[in-house]
Length: 568
Ligand code: FES
Ligand code: MG
Image 1 (cartoon, rainbow, N blue to C red):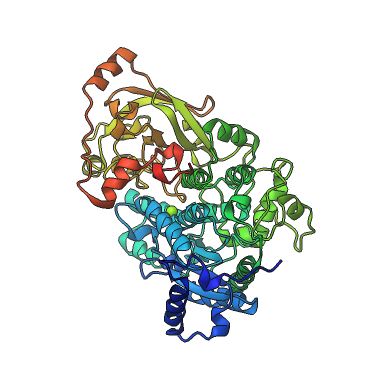
Image 2 (image 1 turned 30 degrees about the vertical axis):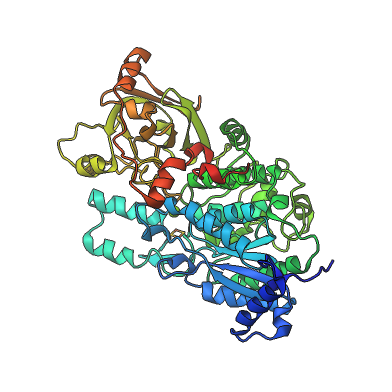
């Protein structure tokens, strides 16, 4: 159904003379060389996140042209506008701190500028959640393209992909089995094309989530960044966005990202054994629409959802394999009796209709298994609770060492990232392979803003002795491309005086994946004593965004959004 074109009229300010406001806006628009014919069309805004500090988005200029082509061919006017970009490895203390800032910019710029619909362009870890959060709150019709994954590189006949292989080789370098010359060679072979990390890390997990939610076109999450299909997908998305802009009753994000759609996304995240970060991000996106993700429900879904993709960091393949094996269709096929069928995507097609539609290609079951031959009979991620994490923590059990999933050990405590850096490789550090490493003060309110530091390095002396994994616990995050028996997002965080802050060297800690528990085995009277003496070592930032962040960030279990950005 077509509507009265709003286009440039959108949100026209009215200080008493609307005619003057219109005349002023059109004359400035005309300074860009537009004709009346163009300015009379509905407008598709394109939220553009290319940046010299974001390698993952380096092909966005080409994708932008393809989106514009689709918009123009369908009768609307494409207008790109810049939004800050977040290149994962170029931001300190961590990109996580800037996700909410980007989300606020996205929301406000979609709202403030005259557009009838918007195409969100994202890819690198924090950009997809920031775009979805902002668009959800803005409430205008929105659709999205993702960057798509990098292709793999080659080294000594082996395929390499950022960034699981980055870690594997660095661990070998630390252990002395890879030398200086080889690590330098590998450095140039890990990330060799445009696009997001080549494994099922955070970016790919978020792409798969965006597709399950219905915000990107079906089949597009895994198209490699450099594949021609990526450009065709961008053009097709431009067409959808133009149709939205022309429609009287276009779908808004709240109609697409419903409670059931969010639950489907969570289930798919478990089935692909996706990133622990994606739980935080999905929780934050859902929170923008008043949808709550409970850890109990997550555990329930995890216990009944098999891991069906064999991809790094927990398996063998890369995202290029995922795409050619059938992509999300393959995953949905494997868990089809478990997903809600009613959620619709940006084209108004329900998940049920998608499942029932004939598939052009057969699924490659070497990469995407069936439910009765899974990689793992249970989901990749679980939430833990217990006396060390009363409000919850996350464990990627699929990436853990099975023997360590039930483990009790002696705590070796690092009170901050600096303390960790100073002492981890000290030859005199009192630590054994069956100890439990604890990192404090790396949560959302800490000065480091919850970096991906939860993957504590194995102390050099133990690494050289062949130790590959230990139980590690923190209020930090870990990269979606990492692996190990790593308990993350401990809530309440140490800065708030949670039990994590009270752990001391030599305390006993017990992890049980079976019981989904993480316990500090210290008598309550002793903890009470320690609690009374607690003061946070982290001062409130003196001013600016960091202060806003410190004072309003929600805990990891609530998505680390700002409290005032949740739906009221
Ligand atoms: Fe951008 Fe990994 S660095 S997705
Ligand atoms: Mg990452």
